[in-house]
Length: 140
Image (cartoon, rainbow, N blue to C red; front, side, top):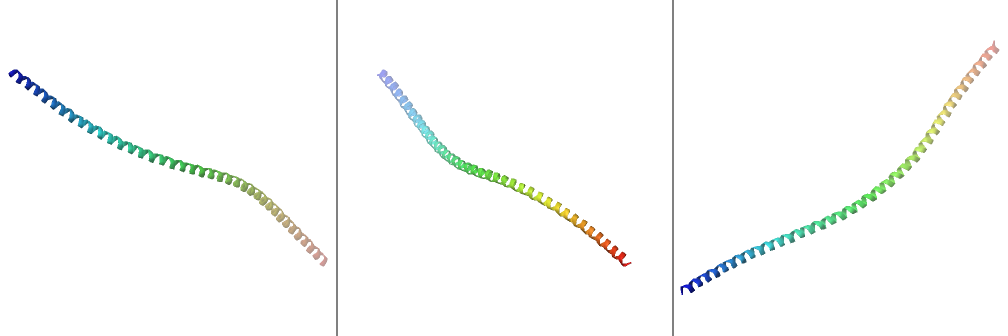
C-alpha cells in the first residue's frame, strides 16, 4: 500500500510538474505570439511608411524631371535669343562702322570746304584790296 501511495505521489508530482511545464510553455508561447504580432504590426507600419516615402519621392522625381525639361527649354530659348542678339550686335557694329566712316568722310569734306571757303574769302579780300588800291591809284 505504501508503495502504491509512493508511486501515486510520484505520479501526481510528475503530473503537477508537467502541468506546470505546460502552463509555462503556453505562457511563453502566448508571449512569443504577442511579440510576433507586434513585430508584424511594426513591419506593416514601416512598409506602409516606406511605400508612402517611395510614392512621394517618385512624385518629386517626376516634378523635378518636368522642371528640368522646362529649364532645358528655357535655356535653349535663351541660347537662341543670345545668338540672335549676337547677330544683331554684329549687324549694328557693321552699321556703326559704316556710319562712323561716312561721318569721318563728311567731316573731312566739311573741313576741306571750310578751308576752300576761307581760301576763297582770303582771295576775295586780296582782290578787293587790289581793286581798292587800283581805285586809289586811279583817283590820284
